[in-house]
Amino acid sequence: MALKERIGFYKSQMKNRLNFVKTKFMALSKWLKIAIVAGVLASVVGVVLFITRDKPESMIAQADKTFEFKAENDLKPYISFFPKLGEDLLLKKIVVNLKQTEKHKYAMGMFEIFLNIKNNSLLQMVSNKEYMVQDVIQRELESFTYEKLSTPQGKKVAKIILRNRANKALGRKAIKRLYFKTFVIQP
Figure 1 (spheres, rainbow, N blue to C red):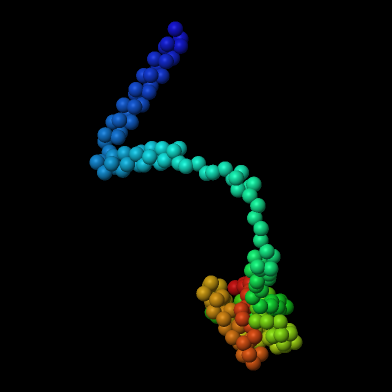
Figure 2 (figure 1 turned 90 degrees about the horizontal axis):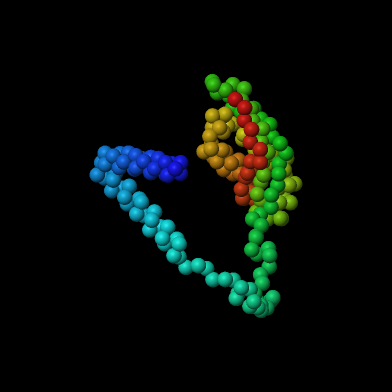
């Protein structure tokens, strides 16, 4: 008896909930009803398409095949797939007082900079003049304000200006790119 009563109770609960959902659905606007019906239909179609999709072939047939290749024709040197784009030189840490403004009178910056040199022979020349390059970069950094260096656009401009000034001091375009390894500024 208790089982029949429970089943009857659950049936009445389900009927009440369905009636509640039906009244709520009927209260919706025409376009919202269309959107809900379209969404339900799209979900059903998606599930049916997923279930009836073509299953991928087994890879067992491919695993049993053997392939031959000639090393001199089919292989390429490792270095040609991953070419090195110049040589890198890390300058010593640079600490500077930034240009004063009314808002930031005692702004400071600490920078570690990588120079990407075009080739190995130019790397030797730049490393011989490293102190000169570092001094030029340090003097140029002192001309920047905290406000300018605190924006992403200001950092990009600073990298371009520093690279151009260093190349000018070297007398040739030896530095291809300039990267900040460490970039700390304090207002």
